[in-house]
Length: 364
Image 1 (cartoon, helix red, strand yellow):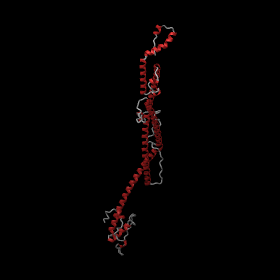
Image 2 (image 1 turned 135 degrees about the vertical axis):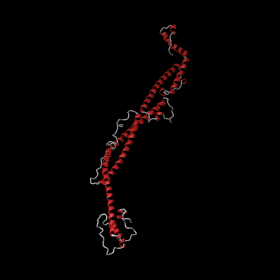
Image 3 (image 1 turned 90 degrees about the vertical axis):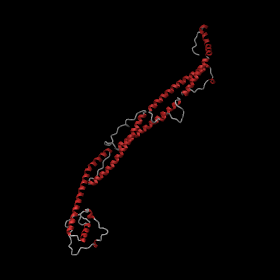
């Protein structure tokens, strides 16, 4: 084995091979061989080493001269010292790096705790550099995880709130989106921006806005239903129960103000048609009386309150045309009847025949 080129730690810590003989079986030193002073150059890592003792036994068994043994031991010590020196420099670099990282860890940890609105736990004062650095790193990892979760939670809540407020403004209604729902919260990167207080406030605003949205959709649905009934009454759509009007289908999207305006418009139209139907019914009754018609001679018509559809009003109009035509055909008879009713008055007024015949009858 080339001991000069071997790893000094491996050489020092080498274990006895399984095939090696027990120490007692090695060729013993001659009784007259002088015992060597192996501790002439003390080295704490070498002195008392079982591997070094075995090495000396091997050298003795092989008859390696003392001078060569000393030279090899010197070289082994030099390599070991060089290895330890390098290890020391590496450890010093690691220490310096940990010392440089520690303030940055503390600064980031403090900043995240401020954003999260939480108190920063204090580390034990007696912790040395390595355990202190590890405790800081572990705490920072936990806070980073909480920060990421809160940031995602706040983002989802803000997105939902923005969408709900947009729908509320579209739906309209008795009031627009309340100002407190749209109040701008502190930025997520500022102190307390991801605190449980802010998250809870956003959750409450989302819940309130969602409840208002549901209430307005219900209001829109009621308005749409009333609108559908009026459309049916006015004959503006078919009575197909399986088909909803556009307003009913879009109850969740049409602005409440639009539905209210449409409903008011149809209610005004209903009132106008009711006035027309009532007037027509009175006129029809008058014509029937003048013509002396009985029920069998009259068309069956719905009462005015049920005759506001275009079809029912059309029946009223057709009946008026029929009665007016019938009246035109019976004008001579009606005039004679009117004159018969007027003659007693002419006589009471002492009108002459000429004056009576010149009387203009304007209505029969």
